Amino acid sequence: MSQNIVLVDGLGQAQPSPSRMGNFRKDLFQPYAARISRFAGENKTWYWKGEAANAYVQFPFRYREFWGHLGDGDTNPYDERDLSYLHRADRHVIFVDGRYFVILDDLEVSESKPGGSLYSWLYHVLQDVPLLWNPDLQQFVYSIGEVTTIVQHIRRDVPLEYENRQRDLGLINPITGEDYGRWVRPIQLFDNNFVGEYPETVTHNIWITNQELLPVLRIHMLTCS
Image 1 (cartoon, helix red, strand yellow):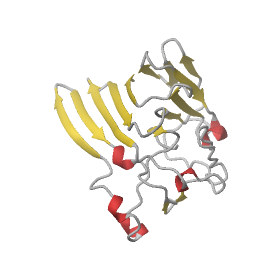
Image 2: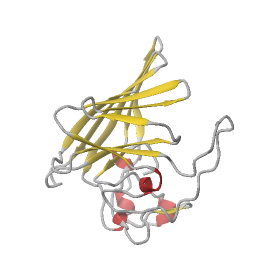
Image 3: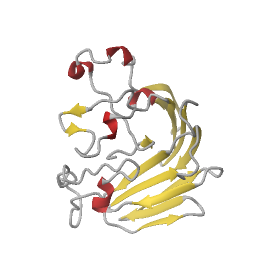
Image 4: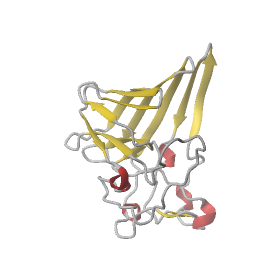
C-alpha cells in the first residue's frame, strides 16, 4: 500500500527471490517479474509500455523480506490468497513536452475469477495541504507551494469510488483489513529543502476503486496529470 501502484482485489506486488524460498514452488517462477516492452521518443515527447502482471503474487505464501513480511500478524491475506488469475497488468505512459503525463492502464483477470475484480489506484501526498476531489470530473487537485497538480481519471462506463484515508488511517487496507500501524516507523526527513513541520505519516492516502458492487474482468483507465 506504500507505493503508487494498482491493487487487484486489495492485493499488490510481491515476488520473493528463489534464494529466500529454496525450491518451494520454483516451477511457478516467471522469467521476469516486470519489464519495459516498448519505448520511443521524439521532440520532447516520450512513450513507454510496462508489463507487470508477473510482479503480482502468484501463489499464497508468507512473503518475507529484510523489512518484515506482508500481513499485519493478525490479518495475513497473502498466506491464503494470490493473483494467479491476473493475466494482464500493462501500463502505457506518454510524457508530453516535459510537463504532462498521460497514463493508460490495461488490467484483466481470467474468467476463472467469478464476477471479476476490484482495481484500486493508490496515490500518496506527503504534505498536509488541502486536497479537493470533484466526483463529476473524477479529478483531484492539490497545490504545494507554487505548483498545482491535477490528477484526472477518465473512465465513464465503470463508476469509481474515491476515498482519502488520511494519516494513520492510510496504514489500513480497506479491502483486506490489514493494519500496518504498529509496524510503521515515523517518516524520516529526506528532503533538506522541505519547509515547515515534517509529517510523521503520509497525510493523504487516496484510493480510487471501481465500485464494489460492479467488479469487472477487464478495465482500461486513462489518467492525466
